[in-house]
Image 1 (cartoon, rainbow, N blue to C red):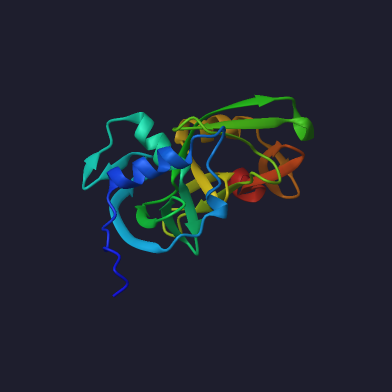
Image 2 (cartoon, rainbow, N blue to C red):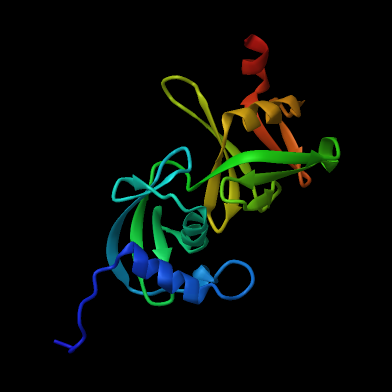
Length: 194
């Protein structure tokens, strides 16, 4: 044995390490951290953006914001990462929910800035793409916007309906422009058939 005591990760320890690591301005540099995997924590982010620990909802928004700041996606799995430990968590759909947006300009000059449930913002464009997946059985759309470092936000229903109001047809697709890029939402032929 190495003489080191094995430590079982817990939410309080991760929170303390995240606070210590995130003292600077902006988000902590999780992309630079590659600590050893320490196991999974019973933390779950529900499809509606709610966070749970051991089945109990997080009651403190500040704690959700703190944990969200150290969230990392690697090989399709989600982790909370500090400089010294990495723990796996469960994400039901996307880790964030886009709950609102602001649009300025028109057509190709339009810029759409989304706000997430934790207060992050992302201006849709080449680095923050909007994509829509459709349920194979129901055809129901699930729209997403890239927020940061591979982490997406599910666009909530009211925002998606508002987004559709800004749409136009381009290259056989109905979609929206933002940041000089066109984001297809639905094939024009399907929209016209309805």
